Length: 315
Image (cartoon, rainbow, N blue to C red; front, side, top):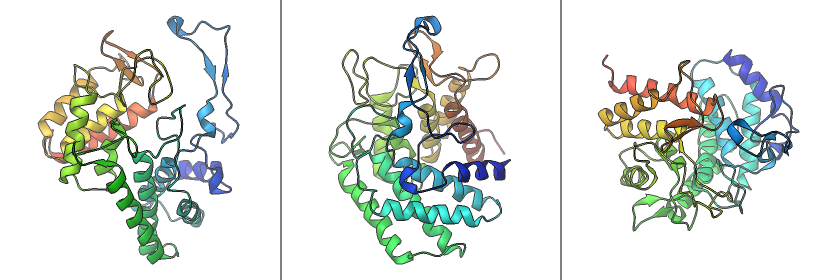
């Protein structure tokens, strides 16, 4: 199954790396234009109803890191070596060499102006780091020294421009004051160790500023009736993937009991089939958003594995 998924991925993203999309159709379709169906009322009056996704054409540099990390994990866990996968990684890094320092729309598909999102830069670093590891393992050839310098350059850039020394926290984008829950992935991706004071400061800042009353995590500050950082009006619920990321980070910094309690509260939100939506509305006490949401279930599995490994459930 893992091999089949990798082959699908390689077919879907085949071509020039500059044309890498953030999403594809199930059969690998590239044309996913967004259309509003104004004659449909939507679930419980939730409008507009859309098909497709306009974000498919956005620049999201983090996806280069996501693809490379997926290929790296497959390689590290015993998936047979693929020349095509190795070639793809090399092509992605050659593209990032000249594009990593560009602003983009980021992981949350913002509809506002492009920014230098810290998470995007971290994932660009991940792409370079994992490809360096591939070359070091002897399964690919590439300019190691040049890419090691690139890895160091990206790391230094993020630590200098994406970190607020006064508040001891990384920020959503270069020069901004806003926080972003995607920053919780910094230690999980190996960008900095969990015990780094900047990592701990970021975790604690997100807990203070992006937590709902029941301890779940918002993606970023929303601005009510005004267009916020994402270019959209209105508020939103806690993002469940981000809440699982928080549980992961708490476990990584040794706060295992707190991580387990948060994880179990998240599990209690599941419906009778054990499924989760995209978000949890703390006011209405209900799931909202896309349902069922893979982006909620994948981190659920990751967190369960991490907590088990940390001894939260014995063994």
